[in-house]
Length: 99
Length: 389
Image (cartoon, rainbow over all chains, first blue to last red; front, side, top):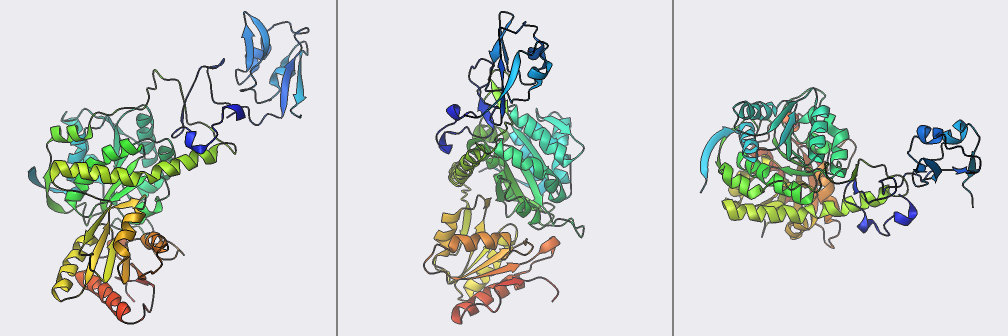
């Protein structure tokens, strides 16, 4: 669960392991990107919107609007780097998650 | 007054299940609970219940199918014992963490090896930490009553429940029991109200929770599990209002002024009550505390009875390898730790693999207690009895 969505106390945690889902861009409230060490960043000037990244992403984390690749849904991206590896125009770079 | 019928306890358990008429029963029969599944399948074949009966290839599959059906919102039951319950172990933990109110009838039996099909409490003891509610019945009547009560207890607590009775000693004994009409049972348990719909609600089932959230889920589960004690009391009272048979987490027998109190679970309570009567007639202040709710441990109820005793004799029809006494003794001992003045406490491991326990054995245990009170405790705190020395 992402830090901003984590309840402040165990008392507010859901009963059991059935978590009710609220409306989010990808339809999930439960965040699965906690262990990412590299994040993909796209250079939209280079991107040709071929949708190969969208096709290969195992986590449905590529955001597409009106047929155009517009970025990533970082709550789900685990940083596997498949998109960067497969991008035919090298528009995606994997950047270390350090601050 | 309900009508009285004479049946083997296993048949009576199947009768109770048929009155509950669960949505799904997935089962793989095992001695000594085989008859429960066998008899219940007859109710299914005769069209007397609306249950979807799923015969599976193992207990692991049985409880998995039960969990799936319960997750979908169905009222679910099954029956098992011993190695069957042991094979379910992996899924038992997932079921309790999923808050799936499955009701399982267990005819308690020894664990192999050596291979043994007879009654003791090793099977239910070995899964005491699986997060299930565990209730133990003394006789056929209580077994029937517990099975009916298991549905509202599990569904209100949102935890799965095991209602057990002793294998063969109780399961294969024909006893007279007073039963309700099916309509009364249906009215008592009410319709199943699912917490959610797998078709309409958006849900994640079986989520992953790692270092950042697992412990919070467990903390919540532990807190809710402790609330089961009050739910068992409440349902026991409501059931009493309906039948005249009131139930609590424990049963007291001549404990109010008792110097020596025996703590016991299951069918041995019946034998012990006879011995208490005999020894009371002889002027000995002895009493009996029967534990109905094995998990969660009704700590406050136990302390309230035992705090005035001078000696407490805990009887375990199970043991733990290398533990400090049997599973019941460990809990009672820990519960009593808070008291400023603790009574003498001893543990007797008995009756494993169905070894008979006789009134003479129980009398000997009480006499050890009376001797301890007069002198200074016990020669041996943990003792095996009903064993060739």
